[in-house]
Length: 496
Ligand SMILES: [Zn+2]
Image (tube, rainbow, N blue to C red; front, side, top):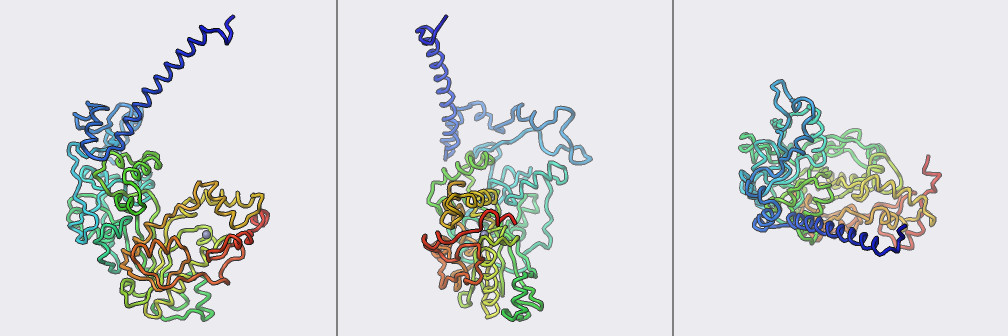
């Protein structure tokens, strides 16, 4: 009977292990060369690597992936591809274009010169895979931010024609914003399209030719009502002026919705990182959603699938960019639990409302006020992470002290905060802001990002003590000693 000590068995085993290692090594080499291809930054390098990997694909210059496997995945086994209309046309062609390459036959992106002040010279942002747009597309990603996923669902349900061309009649902005000199600077604005609200007028020609170009910004007028502000009007703390604050505490507002449009070299420069690394990270950590981040180094613009921002302007919008008029600003990052549902664990909603009231007062005094609301829930870690951290805090042996909060967040999420305010000032430059008289925030990150981008801040205004909920920590930057004294509710209390 063979034992573990038998030299023959050991030799056979060793041989097998060596064979496996050799196999692994070959796999690794193949993988590594594929990674090299991903990282290739210029066409020549890309061509050479393509030849090395798959000469057939390269010379044929056809769609990169048209394999049977992929076709089988999209075609139901029984019957033809379901049609969207009575004409029997399939929703998609039976060839899946997984990615494109710069030197591929027919690929000719529309010229796009980021940072040009003249919109025609700058060129439209074309991100669509619409049949008339796919070959001339000059941006990676899809219109609509994260909502592109719902659009996909609507198409799959045959509720939406994938080639639907929107009718933009009468959708133009209700007030004029810009152009401002900042729009012509390639590094002042890198995370939104400054012409995003002017798309339908600036690029009407291209749209009429059937190219799918969509606005990424919309501007409208509205009335709004908030319980706290209504009460303050009743109590006489805020006066009705008939222009900004109307009878009954209704507010007059101009608002803009902004979807993210990233100029990748500019975004990379803003964070001081390499563009290739940024592209690679965006590719990997979106589950490989956008292969063109890797294969199309010639396309510099990316529409990321993330939430955008809203701008609320109180007072005359023209005053916002007028340096002779006073301006109050609050830049607020989403906190759904507090902002909408009144959770008192933080100062988010109280600070937002306080900021808004100060904006209203500035507008009533002949200046204007701006609230910018970013969809960056839970320090851009998301609400699931936020609630996980809440639980970890409440169950912590040391108790739920505020200094523990950052540590708990870091333990769960790996980082304390992912808001990285570096891109935040872009919207202020889009509005033509050159100075802020009253900044309704004590955040050093926000302050440094804004001042570092060339906008002066004359005064920083903290939230008044009486507005701080008892369960939340101070609105100012407290010392470590202060923080260790601030204690949240016990676990039992939060259940109610
Ligand atoms: Zn909050």
